[in-house]
Image (cartoon, rainbow, N blue to C red; front, side):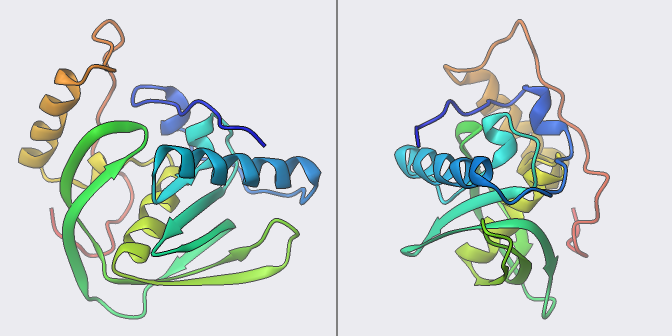
Length: 183
């Protein structure tokens, strides 16, 4: 178990859909521990495997003293209630923009041993689960923003100390449904 470097905005791995996990082995369990340790070291609420450069469908979370992980998550939404509030990303340090998400989510998936599990989230946990699952699809929270908010986010990114103007990133409109939430 070690703290790993987090890939930053502009790295192509963050825009690449991750592959389903098929081997529930020691290597996977080590990756889960690396995700949790790195996330907690950075003070994040969640961290997806692609953020460590690993193209597999799993993420770790630490929300309201609930620490866990989910592998191959499939989301469902029990209702249409929405939330709108600040969202950030460990791959886009220091940038926080109000982002619409669903208020409630149910994620079905597996634990590190291949046993079925379910994560039910409301509020911050629902936001985290949706945000991290987006990472597994190659989608960043910036893609969920309307044009004005996206422009503000890009302004903050260009002003950030970590931003490399020699390698400008691509921001795109998400090809995925935003679950009925208008832009």
